[in-house]
Length: 291
Image 1: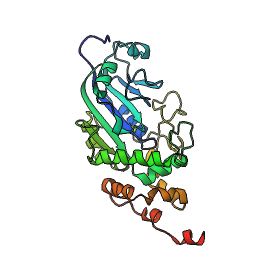
Image 2 (image 1 turned 135 degrees about the horizontal axis):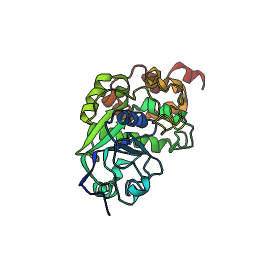
Image 3 (image 1 turned 120 degrees about the vertical axis):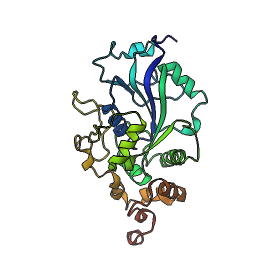
Image 4 (image 1 turned 45 degrees about the horizontal axis):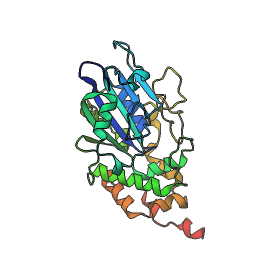
């Protein structure tokens, strides 16, 4: 497959894995807003077994003004690549147990050679994640919690085990991003920026990505917040993203998701004790009064 001359095409290649509603688009936008050169994001790549440029219909380019050639998806799909500072590949709801053994080779053939490659795994605690997935009524909802609870729960456990190092699907270049901490801890974000080769400005931390944003906004991907849409765009830190579970704490279906003791244990190992969530999985008086 022909590629542009010059060897290295992508200075940084970031393969980003996360479940829907895990904060994957918020983190990706934050990375892009702090990139210092031509950047491309391929959103919601449909398959891990094909060329990323051919497996998405949603490609975004950023900061291309000083580049010799602007981003052209048709050329990229044909193997004629423009040099990029950052290439971000977004994979949502991916079962990491089934990454093909030739995944690296497949990506390389599709996007060209990269100087630095990292596999980012974004994970959010299950209490808030499942609440957000229950509140997410967009047609892009891949595994609605009420219709496919077993699938969503199993995917979260697969990602949690990988984040804890119990599995190694994304090694040896794995970078785990705990969304709860990323959202609330600037020092943590600064450490991540250094690891990702970003000049830390924290730009993008108050964005709420979504296709409904005005055309002048870059972050026109994703579906916004399950609860607030883009209402808090520009002031995202005001959103109570780490307390979404409270909306469903008396919902019997939601509470049944945490009958699985492994979920509770994996969450504790990753996120510590989240104040109040024990009310989700311990019987309360309202349970008995409703029987």
